[in-house]
Image 1: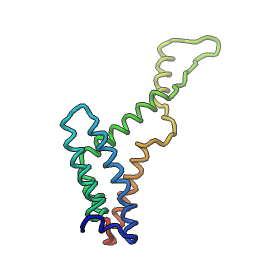
Image 2 (image 1 turned 135 degrees about the vertical axis):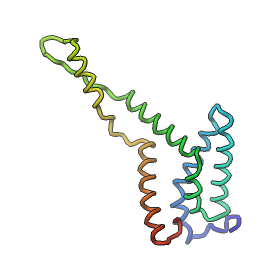
Image 3 (image 1 turned 60 degrees about the horizontal axis):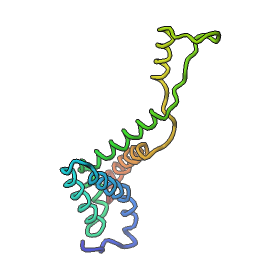
Image 4 (image 1 turned 180 degrees about the horizontal axis):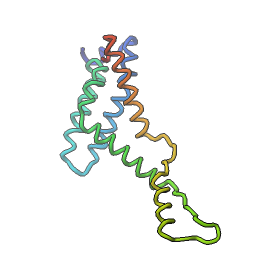
Length: 155
């Protein structure tokens, strides 16, 4: 294509389609670069280079396909999701079970009931970035499938 030749008004929808992937590439590259293992930096460099080239030099919608092959993107996404789940499980208040109103029992059956209740506690309903990423990925699979079936651009 050429430097910024793809930047036209009629191609604006393709930039919107590529925006989540480009943002994920940038964020995951920053995360990879900040890791103590210096070997991960080569992944960050490749991701940023391809993301920059997609944005400036060639058809931007192709980054949605190329971006899916970056392992650093998946490592970063899994780190975000795991960190979010840990924060929710640490922040969730676990209910207590009282077998009798007259006295607090510490019997084995009471402890077992408390443990079963704690195991079934649902995490708070807060939508974090990890959940948002999963929703975007599932939605994108559906959009990509429809566009591919209709022989339309980002497919």
